[in-house]
Image 1 (cartoon, rainbow, N blue to C red):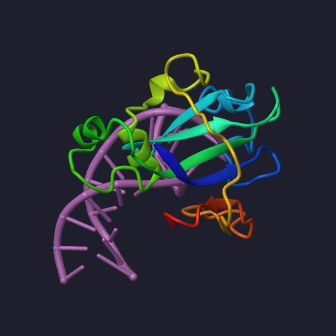
Image 2 (image 1 turned 120 degrees about the horizontal axis):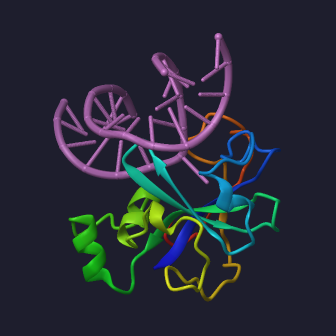
Length: 148
DNA sequence: CAGCGGATCGCCT
DNA sequence: GGCGATCCGCTGC
């Protein structure tokens, strides 16, 4: 999976974040070390996958919103039950990777999920975050130019 | 302890 | 482009 769309979320300074109010059982992974996986249920139906980026006790995370499946495409198609739109949305991305709430609190590299090849792509776009009603003025959504 | 509303998706037009 | 589906965690009383 090549990631091409992410959004940043903060803590007590970000009204749109799940960690805005306080630490709960659900958002606890957000307070963990960088590289911790945070998964939450959205609209009672979908799973959304985040990677913690801040220090312990300082909730910051990145929501993986979109990507292109390049490996294990057959498996992704089976999980998604359709040949296209495999990961062009947070819920779809999690489903394509077979990530559920069970993975919340795990750590990158422990067997559940791995991220490699980190780097800043040339010419990415910055826009406001999507699907939220608070702090919409913050342009914390990042997408690569190629895949839009 | 109950009510509310959401970091969405897919199907319809 | 617009709306209905679908539950569980959180908040407030």
